[in-house]
Length: 367
Ligand SMILES: *Cc1c(COP(=O)(O)O)cnc(C)c1O
Image 1 (cartoon, rainbow, N blue to C red):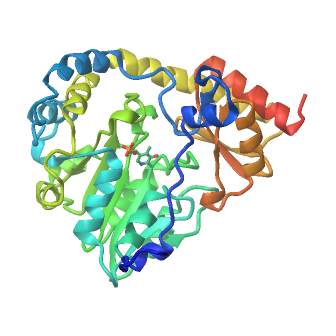
Image 2: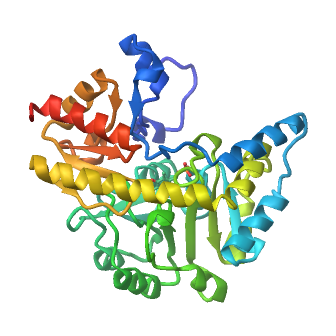
Image 3: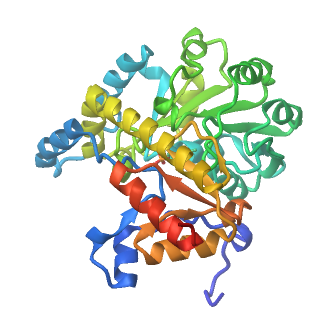
């Protein structure tokens, strides 16, 4: 490196997160109009943003000369009501990714460790490594989290155990029994982070909110987001749900204006958009069933998913990703997750699903 000063040496070995490729970028590269390209790479909502959120943004835009409310009073009030919690149970993040960072700053340091699963969400280990904490990665079971083994992997130096349920990128869902055993079995010195980014897609999800309401588990925090079912990924709005004392500690780390005023207005409106949530959930159930049927028909292995995406074994994941991209279909190669034979496909609209499958068939030479 040619900089005349030294950087934090941790940066030298820090893994880099590779996001799904933006439509515009691929369009420029292929010399195609953006409208001819579909992106099924980042688990975004194929039905678009909540219409109620869009209307609220238009209204709020007129006040953009003012700083946002640093405490997001109205949005938090509404969110607390929606979840039947107190506002003191909530911390807002610039996407739930920022909550992961708050947790890192609050808890991780040299000599400490975090426990994750193989094939876990990529941000957990990146934040831990940035903060010099060790990452203990527990082998997966059928591509899913082995929660009893993760509990066993905890050491006296463990600060956080991260569990995404359903998990991204595998789509796997832990059993209700395993989740409750984990919540009840996690030692007091460890914070259990349950990442519920996809919980709204589930039917009959394990409900951990009563544990928060009872305030008996100060070492439990849930994370949720407006990026997935509410279709607001571009707005960056997520939140953590926990014991008021833990929330207070995290609030010290949060920058005052991390949630912009458009996000506050849109989030508030989106919480009332039951229609959009219902349509999105149904579209997802239908689309996932379509992929399961067609992939089975093609004899392709996939991991049964509880979320809004599906991981498919295609052989050369990177090669298939590139060739599908050449046909204007952006998926996600899984090499970065040590799954080089797999790609991940986000469930789209029926038309997108058909186009994606046709591109996959063509690339694999399947009739
Ligand atoms: C998409 C996703 C998130 C949400 O990220 P945002 O920062 O809220 O957009 C969090 N965790 C997992 C596992 C995800 O897949």
